[in-house]
Length: 630
Ligand code: COA
Ligand code: AMP
Picture 1 (cartoon, protein in one colour):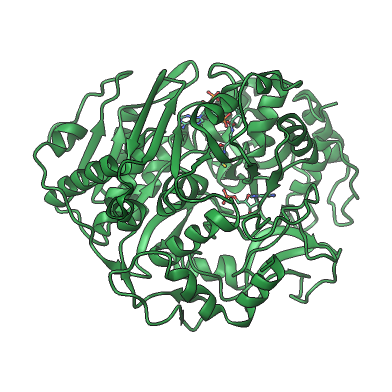
Picture 2: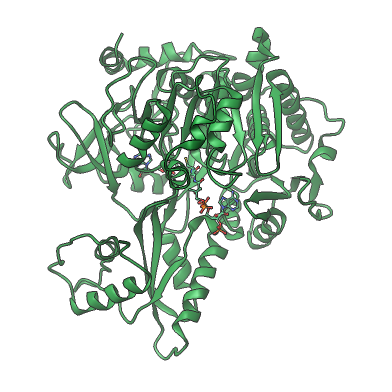
């Protein structure tokens, strides 16, 4: 069957389609049906079935006689180490960690925050939670203490599992002070913290609260897998919205496992036993889905890579890892290839490695620019597939289903809607736009298994953010079009979310931080184009009347403030004090106009602009920051 048949088969009978897919994972009690209509357009999936995520990712492969297969390869050019963990070892390690957590009272429904770098223990921590039915929430290491504190207060974890440090090129990231700072700031206090002491830094443990990772597990009775309901939350993953308060995306257990398992063959074209590598971080959705759960559920070997595309030690690292470990399918963000291409434009490193076992390369997380796709395709000789999805969905909305049928690639398009997603392009009024016309990208409800059923502690925000603008649809926040062949073209965000090196960030959140500076009266942050990272934030601040300080001083403080409050990952380094911000007569800041000036794009002067002369001042400030780039 080709893609059209499979898609039509799903459309004709989604219930039968997903029940058939559900048979490919293990159930304690099989569900009586797939879809449970919740009444608000959203469906829960497989709710009356009982199963366990860790069983499906780990134990079942051991039971099936594949215990000796490598489950996780840790390859860390940053520490110069490599480790191989078999499925049998993984089962034992995870069961012991889960047993130790259970002995401290962690059980089904309890939240556990994981704040760890790219070490296998991070994946083991996720699986140990899944084993107990505890809900994990992984926080990316590049976030500052304040962001961690916000997540602690929202998730109210019983425990936090952390490492003593992370390692970035040229510096050790001291996790422990960040963790202590976050706990001090948060109103909610975890009962205990388990700290993985790394060789690069031994952290001072807080007596009565912190325990050492290994000591904590010593003598623990291994825990069995606890069956949970199909719609039990497997995890909460916070992502950026339009304000500084992150959205806690809830991932339901069963739908997640069923859908991810489907994607491994249908989209990534791999069979059980093969090596799959997603070069991302466990702190992002790509890491949750394609470093941890999907490859393991499908019985693949996954790679936990602690390094960067360049500088660890060079632009050949990706190719070295692919060749050395026999990667069959490789997934990363376009920014990573932009970094590689910049350092090795001729692709000389590629020739030094045997990429014969690699079949395809996948890109997502941000717009894949045609230059990058073409360069990667030409230099590696492998097909490069762009695909489009979000933290909210947990798996691709639009992609090229190579395991079903490899569709012709149109460079710049992530290809077509996957079964489960009925993607439409809508105008302001919610009417469907004809092929080739730009509009808001929406998905007809219900969303498929594995997608978010709600936001943690924020059901109303969920409805407002995603379901209210276009009744009967999920609003993706992206704009784009569909062509006559049904290919999607993703053009831009419709909100204040920007994408910096594949990391999703809120300009609204940065504005909240800048506005808290005592000398700042007003501010605006916009996303400007960047050759390497796709976008970078650029901030403009107006000083409070009477403040008479050197502008450079305030600008430096603003940069430091965003780094301290959001984290280095925000990459907020462009900031300018300005006299006034351009606004409409009704007082709306003209952020898009400022971004267009910085990008060197033509723009139409908004008819409602209050004082066009301000744009010349802004142009001068942008030029002082070195923009537009030539
Ligand atoms: N812990 C602590 N700090 C972190 C971090 C982590 N896990 N990850 C990043 N940072 C810091 C970096 O050290 C850097 O700090 P600096 O301002 O002191 O230099 C800052 O956050 C920005 O990091 P990054 O986005 O990684 O940019 P970079 O300039 O260091 O590297 C790339 C550029 C393109 C090589 C890098 O962005 C990259 O590898 N991107 C891949 C994207 C990706 O995997 N995205 C995931 C979604 S699929
Ligand atoms: P995240 O939730 O962090 O995965 O970010 C999701 C957002 O990243 C999407 O809503 C898009 O704006 C953007 N994005 C992800 N993949 C792509 C892609 N292939 N092409 C264009 N934009 C993408």
